[in-house]
Length: 355
Image 1 (cartoon, helix red, strand yellow):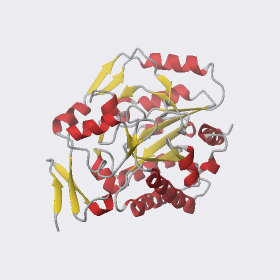
Image 2: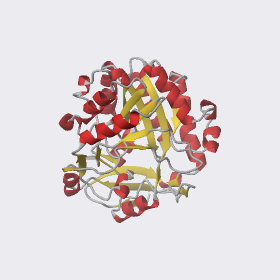
Image 3: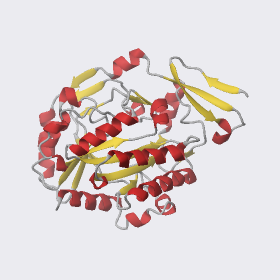
Image 4: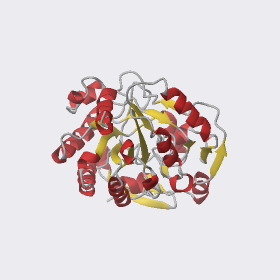
């Protein structure tokens, strides 16, 4: 049997049968580069800078025709010491260091000023431009943000992460106003694509500990990546999530999204020899200018996970990230959003806040 080997050293091995990727019938061993020590060093360099822009911005979404969740983004820092090959930040930020904004008091003033003019449910998150928990033990930013938002009865904040160090979070006084969101993937994809992140076992243990501390928890299957064993292995992650929790009613929400990226990311990864296995199969350029899996693949992803989640807890607030009406309908999830996606999540947040 012939083999195609893409050699980048040092490496880990990921095995795929290429006929299942649409190619001729031979096995493919893709050698995915581990992070070079110099790159790892740069990514774990912490720089302090004064930030002159807005700390609070609404989620930009991805363009007309795709449902956005209505998330409000707080950015006290940028960058991440871990490295996921699919991460858009490497094409967006233009630097590898972690930048911590030194003028946190300005963030506090901006938030207080804007909240004074806001009504209704506000759902904040800090995981857009960097991992929320990666530097938490050193900097305590999540604790400071939770304290800032504690007086507002209509506000929830989500700290999204692929990390497992939740020490210090027990210092948050009102955990019932905080969601700890865990980005989950299969062990195979974590090994191949998510360098330096916590293993699935460690994320699940952190999930359990956060529930014990009284936090709401969120699950994010985003991005889901196609490979030959994807269906059985994503189903198994669903099972393990429910096994880890004492009460699945503590799940705030659960998002699903297929791998997608801007063309600039593909070009950057190809320069580094890191474009496989993400680009081993065909992708289509969507109306939002991003490469995506074909709609049928995405519908398969979401239908499988929806069915698996509903076997354990049908009332789980499950939603799709940046998907069209057609996809919502074809995977039988459109009935969840008669008033739109933000309305679904605001309703869930209101129930969590008991208002």
